[in-house]
Image 1: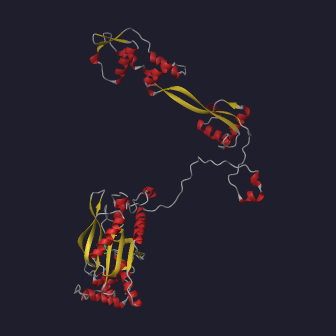
Image 2: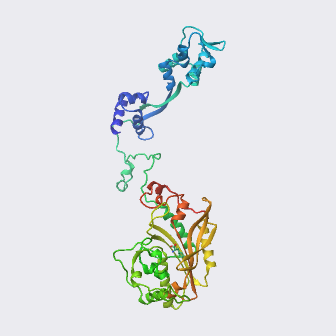
Image 3: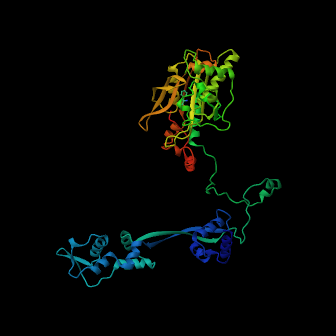
Amino acid sequence: MEDLKLAVLAYIAENPVVESSLDLAKKLNVTHNEIVGALKSLGPDTIQFLNLEQLETKRWELTADGEDYILNGTPEKRLFDTLPAEGVAMKELPKDTITQLGTNYGKVNGFFAIEAGKLKRVSETIVDKDAELLRDVQADKEITEDQSKLLLKRKTIKLAVTKYFKVSKGEKFALTLPKLATDLTHDMIMKGSWATTEFKKYNFNALGKEIELGNLHPLMKVRAQFKDVLLEMGFEEMPTNQYVESAFWNFDTLFQPQSHPARDSHDTFFVKDPASAEIPDKEYWEKVRNAHEKGGYGSIGWRYPWQDEEAKKNILRTHTTAVSAKMLYKLAKDTEKDGEFKPKKYFSIDRVFRNETLDATHLAEFHQVEGLIADRGLGFAHLKTVISVFFKKIGLEKIKFKPAYNPYTEPSAEIFAFHPILNRWVEIGNSGVFRPEMLGPMGLPSDVSVIAWGLSLERPTMINYNIGNIRDLFGHSVSVKEIRSNAICCFQK
Ligand code: PHE
């Protein structure tokens, strides 16, 4: 670019007025685009070395059909050449475009006449008038307005507009390029040199550089919205930053018997090293054993020998309810310490792991949203109301409850939401009132009940972002482009 600018300046020094930048491009052996770039950077809007006057020429150019007519004759000429002397019955003429055009224009130009239903030539030879006209256009000869109208109508020519500059010496013409300052510096201000420095003009029309920045994954956007809703409803977030839990917290404290199929290696990931956890609180440990083996708190228990080894196993948590159990245990401890029970509303949104066969709706890891309220006098009706309010705030107005079974809740209910786009009821979560066999061993006062619910984060995210396959949402086949461009999460309220 620098070299081209200098070459332009040298040329203008010799030829102070250049009528067309098109010629200049030819003289300097570069494309017209390149010349225009150089001229603009030397022109009146920048350093005023040159004056530029924008001009344009309009000329007729041949279309592909126009070229074809020059080369092979117009359709009427072609038809004339192939028509037998006795003519052809109009009905028998082929139906192709060339014959049709040839018939029409041949009649207009007086090549043919129709006699007794036959198309016939009127003379031995003809002059292919329109092809001659096209040759004039090709040779850049002037044509009349009527002639151009005719050729335009035949789609054989088009108007080509060429924009170019007339170039002349500008006010500040020089043969060398100044070094323009691009920024005002601290030094210039201190030394006062800013007053005499020539600055490069800002180009406010230039496109900005694309900014490289991080983008939130849709799951994180939905998580942020759910978090806002739950905080707004007065819930406190539980610490869920520990993926490895002991089976004790994940299952046993939740009164889930050790023979429960969910504990099977088909559903649960076991940790090899360290394979087992320490006993957190011997007294509580024994109370949990007792609840499983003998019951209490109005229950007869599961009646089987409860194994320490099974409870000590380290696993990847299969649900965030493991964290809820820990928090409720802690709440019971605080109640003992303070001599007073304080009601709590807790929530969490974090990752859980299940040894699933992967398919369009299942992954081995996903996220759960979980909420619980511990207070005196709470029942199923409260649970239904809290859940309805929560779901309404995330845009799901119509909610249904279906009786279900969880080892740790009674009553339990699956939550279904009516999906307005799918136009059907979809299962969206699970809920219940925690059992006394779970809360009793922790030491919570017997009149305190805990209502809780859980749902996956993936399902509402897929609904909101219209994602059909969970693998397009999570994992290595997610499109980074999608992540960069997807909208902020907005559940209609
Ligand atoms: N833990 C349950 C699940 O994984 C959800 C749940 C949470 C159910 C709290 C009831 C109470 O599906």
